[in-house]
Amino acid sequence: DVPDARAVVPLVRDTVLLDGRPAVLLGSDLNALSLSSGLRAAVGASGGGIDADRLDDGIVAGAATGLRQGQRLTVSGIPVTVVRVVDDQAATALNGGRFVFAYLGLAERLAGLNGAVDSILVVPGPGVPEARLRAQVARVVDGRASVVDPDFRVAQVETANSVTHDSTLLVSLVSLIIAAFLVFNMMNMAVASRRQSLAMVRALGARRRHLVGDLLAESAVLGLVGGAAGVPVGVLAGRWIVGRLPDTSETVGVAVGYHLPAYAPVVAVAACVVACVGATVLAARSVFAVAPVEAMVPGEAA
View (cartoon, rainbow, N blue to C red):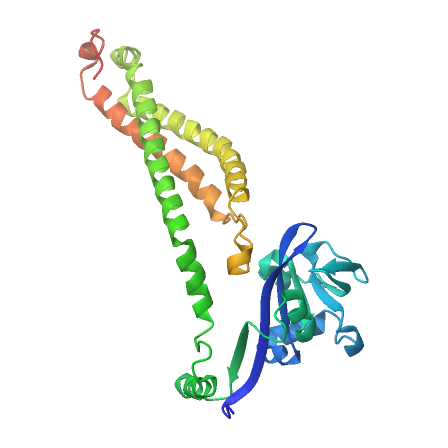
C-alpha cells in the first residue's frame, strides 16, 4: 500500500536479562538487511547466512554478552540456542556489544508481544521525497501509530535524561569553580609566604625575571604533578558514580556506560597547569611591585 517504499522492516526492541544483567533485544526479518549497506557487510563478514531451520529457537549474540556459539540457555522463560556470536569491532556500537538478535517470530515471543511489533521502519525508494513517503505511510496507518523520523527516539531519550544531564553539569561547574579558587588561594599564599626571602634575594642582586621564571616553573611542575595524580582519581570516581546510576535500559533500550574522551585527561592537566601558573603570576606581581627594602619590613600580608 506504499508504492514509494523500497523496503518495510518490522522491528522488535526490548530488554532481556542475561545472567541477571540487562541486554538489548532486537528482532526483525531478512528485510533488515535493506536498512544499510554496512549492515549487509557486517552480516557477510560474520560468516554468511544461517540455516532457516535454526531461526525458530536460535539467537545471535554480541561478544559482550559472554555467550558462546552452540550454548543453550533460557531467555524470558523460552529455551534458545546461540547460533552465532558477533565479535566484530563495529558491533560494539550497539550497546557496547551487549545485545541479542532474534528472528521476528522468536523476538516477539521473547518480548511478550504476541504477534505485535514495536516499530516499522520504512525505507524510501531511490529519489523519493520524504514528505511524499510520509503522506503515504500516514494514510495507511490512519492514526493507529505515530509516523515520525527515527531521530524521534533520540529526542525522547535526550528529553528523559535532560534533568539528570543539567543537574550533573551544574554540579561539575560548581566543583570546577571551587577548585579554581582553592588553587588560586594556595599559590597566592605560597608566594606571599616567601615575600621577605624573595625581597632579600633581590636586594642581593638577583634579577626580577629570574625569580619570576623560577616561581612560574615551580608552579607549572606543581600543576603538572597535581593534574597527573588527579586524573586517575577522577576516572575512578567517574566510573564509580556512573556505575551507581539507575538502570535506564528498561525505558530507553540502551544501558548507560562510562565514556571518557581521549582529550579529556590532557585538557584536565593543562587546566591545572594554567590555574597554578595564573595564580602565581598574580601573586608574584604583587610581591615584586614593591621595593626590596620595603618588602623586607615585617607586616601583615593582604
